[in-house]
Length: 414
Image 1 (cartoon, rainbow, N blue to C red):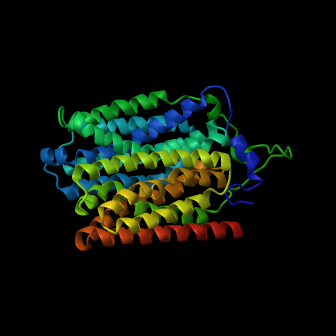
Image 2: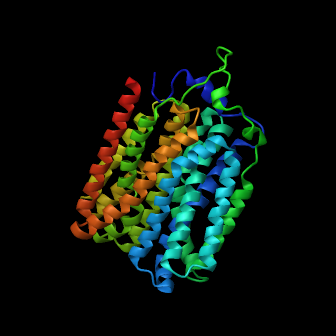
Image 3: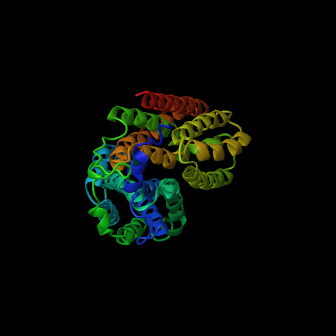
């Protein structure tokens, strides 16, 4: 029996997935959860993309921009577990819509009122909380609204929000910041956030659905009162594994271009390499999700293999030669940073009675990795160079694989 799909919970999980037909349509659910996830994470990447313009107008240093970016993910890390419990106890569609509206309102405040670093940090912290709430609620919407055979692909689409938001933020620089000004990019984000909030279907039946603890088991016809399939300590260990893997991979988008240029890759070619690698990573996320739906089990093993391949790709980046970057960068984005959707699928498989709470705990590790990774990598690169920084990232990824394998063994043996 695979630890990804306990036999007893198969029936419970199928019931928890909700109706497999009828409104809202499956494609519409996938699209709306992807949009709300992208809209909720976009403010942090807009600050990064507009850093030059923001610094020039407000007199903020580069470290101040880094502090604001870190505040977004620190607030998300603190809010992730509570937001998961909130989603499990309420209507995730309403919760996601409210969080998207809050995210949009913070962008309007940034666009209209922000004039100092403390205000930027405060607004991004609020947006970080809204992002955490959106992410866990979107996970639960997918679990409740889609059949099991579609959830892997749906979570992969939803987890493509981060690279998708990176691409959108990059496009905003030449289209808005250079012409209308950086504040209009946040106005546009607010419009996007409000539109996605309005597009989330209101499924009243989902709000009235029988809780998992009172759900009737179809095989015996008795009321089942299951506890979560894995204990909290296992989720904490899985969160640590995700945090280590996220720490190793979160520097890819921030430092790949700078490191490639230092390795004698032309600047324009380095930018194209980042774009192509990001697109490749998104494609692999979607393919991995679709294959997971057909495979049905063994998801943690595939995640461990992807993170391990990511550790190897960081070693290739440490060779510090142009050819190594063109070979390793697409591999890194396709492995080291393509596993979150599959990881979330594995988490909800082993926690069918409280999927949002479970992913809220494990995504805490991913948020922490998003903060620690760029800071640690940047300090190492500044004082020792990019080669030691990539080797450090490889070692952290290897530690993430070790923690994941340990969690798998402990869960299987319990």
